[in-house]
Length: 218
Image (cartoon, rainbow, N blue to C red):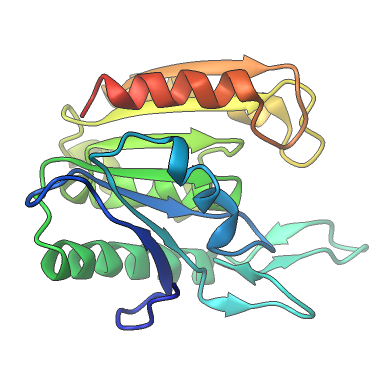
């Protein structure tokens, strides 16, 4: 069922807990929709309240995006960082709305992103660290152009990141993802980084690994 009562449309899998369930918010990739990552929901821990959000920008003929990507042959591929920052703020607002609507404890919120959704999950955590606890970052990278200028003044010690990438990713180069761990270490964020012999996708072993990682943090 698609819910439209908050600032982002979303689908939901309820928790088995009566109150204060841990929350997992899924953020899909460019050109996809809320149903993509939601296919993982049935295999994730039952105590999680799982919400998969739809990105705000509709694409033609189908799909959605968190921000525009221009594929101009002359300029090369470039991101609309203004839209990206707006989506960071929109996701932060959406987290607050979900917490209020579903009576969620603020101390156990996880973001799970893929590709463009991962890029924004990093940015949300680094801009609004007080709103999240765990980040599962699949097939993405840290876009420093959309991070706040005061990043060195924020408190990140409570955050925990699981990061993974395909070693033969043809969409986002693995070298970009390999810069993630040194960056997170530099701001004292707990993290693990894994690579799998796949392209721009999630291998079964990758799913098993991040699911186990998440279970240990609920």
